Image 1 (cartoon, rainbow, N blue to C red):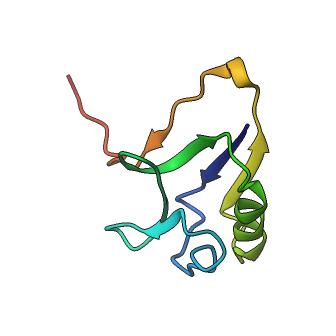
Image 2 (image 1 turned 45 degrees about the vertical axis):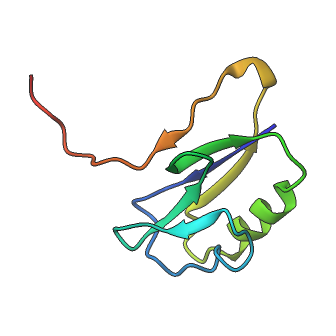
Length: 90
């Protein structure tokens, strides 16, 4: 298993990742995101044979905004959806 994470503060919308891995998409804010089955995320865990595509996308990013790392199967990593970062006060 491997996890792809996008650092939204580092991403500048160059989109070199989009041509190397079709799971990367442009979101509504003009930044890169990862398309999963049911949402657009900034972090997602995969168990498939496409890790090389993700690593090529990460290597192509001139801002080093994409990380690809191995994760343990039992970690239970949850996809991190793209959300507003504004904190809501109770």
